[in-house]
Length: 257
Image 1 (cartoon, rainbow, N blue to C red):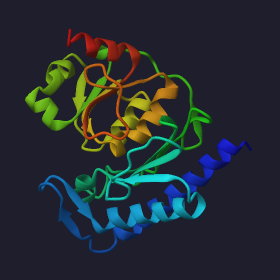
Image 2 (spheres, one colour; image 1 turned 90 degrees about the horizontal axis):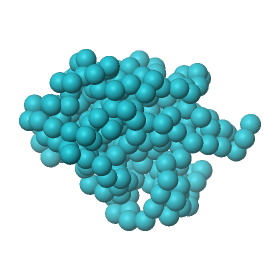
Image 3 (cartoon, helix red, strand yellow; image 1 turned 45 degrees about the vertical axis):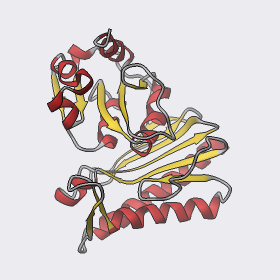
Image 4 (tube, rainbow, N blue to C red; image 1 turned 120 degrees about the vertical axis):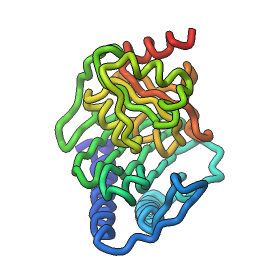
């Protein structure tokens, strides 16, 4: 087993442990708080899951840098070295209201370049993991090819506000597709694009929302950019973001010309 594969398997094990913890916590009363508004929630499980993963990283890789959605490392300004970006529960509103359709996500960057991604749809037990060193896997099965289809031949995922308000032409773009999906969980949308169930996803995302997905999508030839055609910023604020097949991406960009 190569060093890269061994590292991937180690982190995968931590994410599975975190998933077991989350499922157990769903048997108990969940404490819910509002962050910026009533649509932006955090729970005691988000915080505890982030701390569990942070503790694992600090124990085994104490010199690495960590950013977590729920407060870890928010002042990080350097891309040097190895950077872990954690979203302990992506889709917290779904977690609270549906108790499904949420993910645990970790993206790992080295020298500013995406190296490993982990997206675990906990309740469905669908796990995408890997990166540019190891290949990309879904539950032990390697993914190698994604059909390079255009907008009109597939489904597009979209952020609800972008779709209803036509931000960045999102409504116009989505209407060209066979259909649009609004799922409320970036991780599931990334999973759908990575597996070919969707050919694109448009949203406004923070780095912890897209770090894992980028690391999984780029080695498969998928395009990850800020809309309309800018490089994403792994240390930036929320960004209007697209992940798509190459053909779909170029068709999206053409709407801005």
